[in-house]
Length: 148
Image (tube, rainbow, N blue to C red; front, side, top):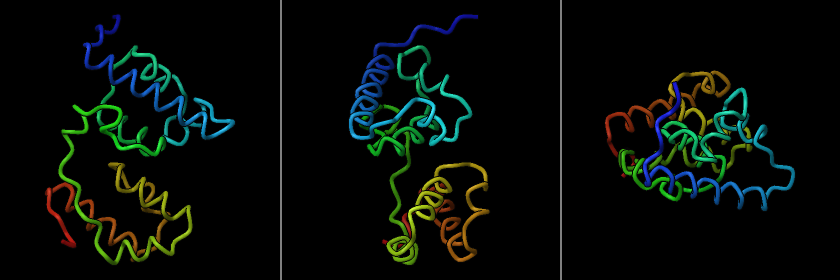
């Protein structure tokens, strides 16, 4: 069954995604859809290519993954989907302090852990950081604002 046509708003999202991707490629020589898809946690680049070219509509989960890798706010790509996000809680001071001195791998794992639904990334972090990440995820789920 063929996919439904995208709405004008979804087409604009795809155009903004494509523009962000072009900027990302210009700033990251050697960037490829395959590498990008892997950074997003996808096995292939097929879905990413379809999002880029407006073949399938963006969803919130994909938007968050792609905006994280692109280094842009989700609202830059899809203001409508980004508006569905709960207000951003402040990261607790303890976690922020730990991340300030953490290596790049740890910081990326924390980002992934905050975005993913499962616990795969958490299994690679220290117990104290896991506890803080879980506290932030709980606050996000409750739309609470810890640390403020």
